[in-house]
Length: 107
Image 1 (tube, rainbow, N blue to C red):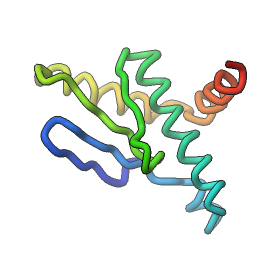
Image 2: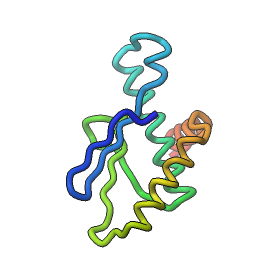
Image 3: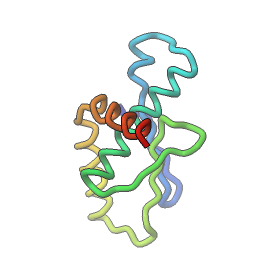
């Protein structure tokens, strides 16, 4: 699910693979963009709702999760994030993603 992690100082980006594109071959640009937003939105939603971790996507690539921790982060907090992300990635992200889209369209 995670294809790349890039870090500069405390800033980190986690890139997710696009499984739908892999399954269907080549999907149109708009379709790929939608799926990337969908899956990353599901991950962000679960991280915030279940673990109170705020993350976002950089404006240039919606398949990435961007992390900007506090300057006073400690090792226990980093471990908490990694454990939380592992738990989120085991969830059914499709159900969470559909809920995320419902809330976007409602409000």
